[in-house]
Length: 315
Image (cartoon, rainbow, N blue to C red; front, side, top):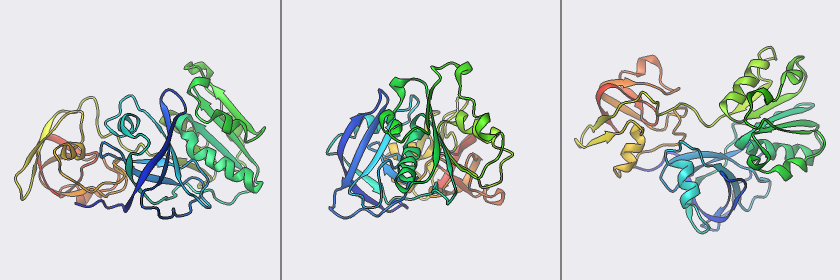
């Protein structure tokens, strides 16, 4: 089965360590073709060496791009995506990569407030560099645990005096206080990317701001695996093949491990690419796509699983 998202082969042209857990990858077209222009805030979908599809923000300038630059944090609970990028994506490796897309584009505004936490600096740095190049005023707040865990520290500092870099040293009492920036709604457009606690904090302190003024980039989506999950089996309608789904795997991952190619894109329950027919069984629906009336006959196999017993699906 072919991928639903059009992909092209790219070489890993270069790789460098930004921190102990974050690596930067420079990707160039393996077919020698051109790269489509893109704007700050754009991302690409990468088929990682494990076969998992992951979305990564682009760090580099996109007006006349000769490469795509992404940064990947190795997640401690990685189920194949970031772990395989860190373990297997070396210079010379070929990866399938989508064309750039932008769901986090800068809107016209008199000024901007950019907020990043950890690896969330990737789209925010690109935005800051673009705004500086065109002379637009902005403030940038970058929160990390420590200097050693701060990717692109020098590049962020080079953006100018309106940059705040804050390290909390893992102490909840040292978390940055955003209230002064949000107490009184302003004409600024706000862009935030980072871990869930940071984004929840910004949502909380900006609840009284006008709708559409505060924007978030979040690739995490839904948790496909939870501590209470149990193993089950999936039967494939038409072929009769039975695949075991471990408690630590999604249906999509189990099928991939069994050598069965299935179309996918976000792998976080938000895009609908991996929609399959649900023939029998009780599904635990965890996606953000299906309507209630669709849940008896369809399933998103990247995040949903059996509620109890086994499932039969048609790919």
